[in-house]
Image (cartoon, rainbow, N blue to C red; front, side):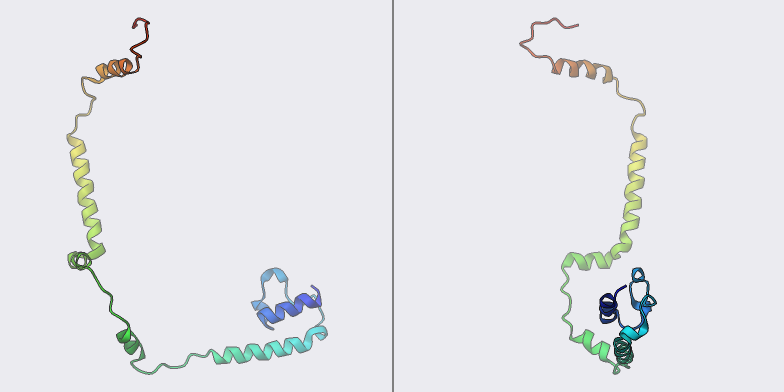
Length: 138
């Protein structure tokens, strides 16, 4: 790693090498003397930034006031109806009923094919015959 690249890393990620990309390998490749001043300045800036992001206690009721000042969502009549009927909780029972009804109706269908299956093949073969064709049918 050359001094210019190290300076770029310090400017971008700060003095703490654990914040640097792992592919860069850390600062052990260069002597600390070469960029000691830049590291000290970056370390001071890192400490100042870390201290400034300490969580401050919010005033009581701030969240409630923010939510109260937000505009209310407009809901259509069908959204209200879906909510009254159970919303997304209604989807699973409806799906289960539709699935059982489909399986039940499929159970009532005859298992074998219809009697006209053999005739259907003949009709399909005739549908592809060209009327201007002079060949005899097999």
